[in-house]
Image 1 (tube, one colour):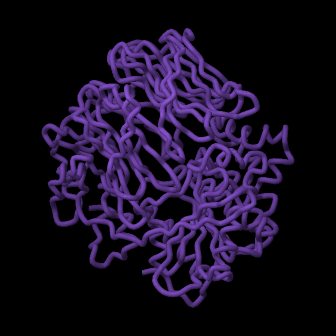
Image 2: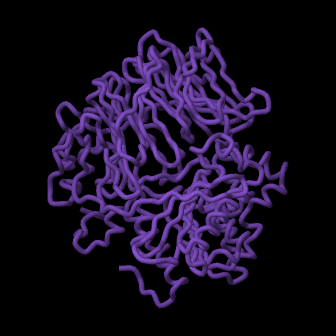
Image 3: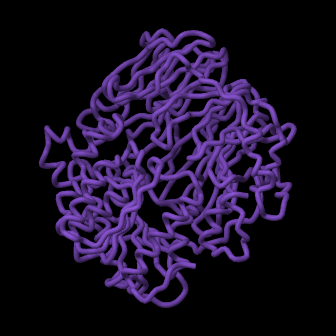
Length: 637
């Protein structure tokens, strides 16, 4: 069974949490709701799977060495589109294959559906023959060259609206008629992408940042020939920097209403906008925190996803009456939800203590993965610490026993993201090895209002580290953390903050673990994908040539000679977000001064979709930390 064949009897719990088969929330075709597409790691690599809910047949759609997670069903359910890049570099083309490809249920994945449970003895039944079920792929838009993806919308007549981004062209959007040649309908140097295509296929909603603020989009609605219909732009409202997001056109023929996310009241919330008449309809959804929404299939109500203080819940909002009704879900995090045509809600739920489950308000388990289940972990405790910019929320997990513990500050990426009460195999592994884990929702994180998210601009990195320092001080003073055994760790933006923190707070940390980090900000800017260049110009107020002092102040390379802690760095050689050259520049400086460090380079992009690779990377990090915190500690089991 490849990477998943090891007997679970000898497998430590922390590895089981990675290897246990998982499934994502199924996406379903709008006009053929029994046809669904989901992601699973059943083969040991995250790939796409097709599922005919009427017959129970399911099969593996993609089979690539570095995995695949980006896929879309056409509205009629006849085609599966998926994005094909090269070894995780995110640069590629859209491919497609028929939903009803050969092999059908022949894969025998053992996915127990609708609560029927899994088959087999804990192994992935029939998975060694996974390739046999993969359908015949073809380029979906043969007239378009490779690019970074910038949104995709598929129409009922076979038309595709394809968003693209390249360093040379900037952002472009093409309309591709069924069997026809691509036609460019939008182009701009700044970031833009496809938001949605109307139900009747006549209107395209585009999110764009032509004004130069990549953190706050405007919305333009155009016809299929690119001619403008209407514009909605909140960035011009006084001195406020407000953003908009496309949540989707109404799913009803002849209805041009667009569900839009806005920040006019200091947080994300939805409203309804008719681009044909200009009418805006505010919604009486008075919930604290950020609010997202999507349409119910009949267009009469909204499924509201509410995120507040690191947890999520669901509500139904009646558009005619304004009635808001809570949908019962357990305490934890909702990572996705969808309203089915029969009125039931399916959602992906987890908590820090309990692994993910695809649930339904019908009471049934929607998708029950094959094989063994991931072991539970420990719950999180909520901590609020007063920081220089206001109260900072942190989530804490700790092992049994009395502190102070060796403690990992596991810093999230983004930066516009947040840690939540959701299941995560990494933090659980550290707890299993006797570490406390602290996750900080620093300024820049989402879910705490617009002002909190936008606060990091210009003093990039330094603002976040002030909040982390405040929580670190609480962790030591409270007796949770051993001040001599503090580990600063993170991936992506969290990896960036790790390297920056090791240099600007050299006496605070005993070990640093940085995965796919920004290490040399200037070189990273010049080598990264175009959309991230735009984000960096927004965060720092210009290019490295225009504001060199800001890039210098925010770059880990500036402080590399102050680093005292042993540092471990992992990097993907094909990473377009935190490219390898700027990591090598930082490593060269560490080598020049003989600093204690290790570097692990792997053949993928910004992270890995291969389960065994994820386990390997975490194993190396834990062993590195143990070796430098307690030299007498032996290697991991």
